[in-house]
Amino acid sequence: MENTDSFIEGLPKVELHLHIEGSLEPELMFALAQRNKVDIPFKSVEEVRKAYNFSNLQDFLDIYYQGMGVLQKGQDFYDLTWAYLERCKADNVLHTEIFFDPQGHTERGISFETVLNGITRALEDGEKKLGISSKLIMSFLRHLSENDAFKTLEQAIPYKDKIVGVGLDSSEKGHPPSKFERVFARAREEGFLIVAHAGEEGPPEYVWEALDKLKVDRIDHGNRSLEDDKLVTRLAGEDMALTVCPLSNLKLCVVKDMKDHPLKKMLSLGLKATVNSDDPAYFGGYMNDNYKAVTHALGLEEQDLLTLARNSVEASFLGDAEKKALLQKIDAYALESDQSCNTPTKKSTPAAGTDKKKNNP
Ligand code: ADE
Ligand code: ZN
Image 1 (cartoon, rainbow, N blue to C red):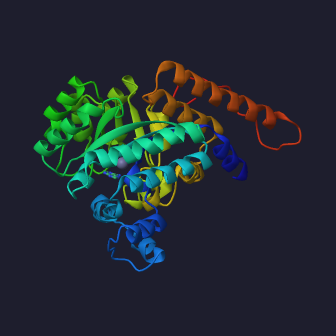
Image 2 (image 1 turned 120 degrees about the vertical axis):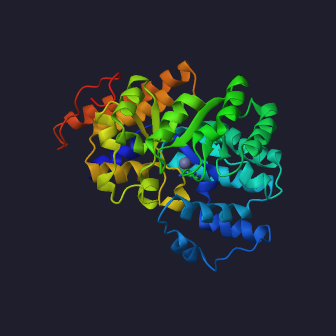
Image 3 (image 1 turned 180 degrees about the vertical axis):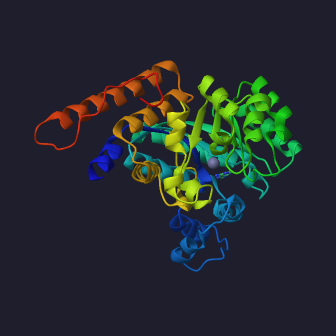
């Protein structure tokens, strides 16, 4: 166990599913509430943490939208993003692709530019000072209207140099991807890459719609795809990545127990699954915590962990040269730990050979 933990800690990682507003730790929430003189319905950090008990996605979203109320100025978005990047550094996350929810802020009177500039300034500093590369994805809130999403897309068009893609999040049930088919067609015309939350709580049909109507480049979550064999064949055949979020799934009761988590099954079915933290301040852990929780519960081996790390690089929106450089880092790490396992002083068994093409060696 200890060995696997240190293997996870040292593994070079990429994150592909992180809502920056979901990285707002209670301590920062309190500090910003004071700084901006915003009332929050909690007396202490402990009280906030106690409130983080969710029985479904909507339970969480209600608290998540309330929490973002403390974010008012560009500097608040900077501080939020910077704090997340420091957690990336601590967890050896070398590249991250983060979501932001502009409508969660513009509907409170905060300008699109205030949000965007605060986040991107921190991302630039993250690259310069911490050596962490990043991409930014703007998500539409699916409980709002198509018209609202169109307005938000128009706001993003002048900032295509800063926003690589568009996504779809918030309350899934009752808001199928097809509701936004025309907005995503326009986004694609503008050159944005496309992702969508699908199959987290919603049925496999929503994953089909994300593929066929939105023409996604990745599926966020996708857990419920496993209920439909034809869909699994399609996803595996297209090498379509799923950005899976183990601790989120546990906290939002998508799975009852981490032992029931479908990640290992996804890999064995040839799906390009990846591990991510979603809303780490609300769900109890960042990247290493997610890797560790699912590894302990499912008995994942070093080869599985390497596969997951490689999948994330391959599914990222980086260019070929950057992907190659990251894959080389993972290969070097695999080799190094293989060699240290083979030294007579260590007890653990050597890892099997690597096969980059297979999702589950
Ligand atoms: N917004 C933030 N986290 C989310 C999640 N897990 N699902 C849908 N929308 C979200
Ligand atoms: Zn999410």
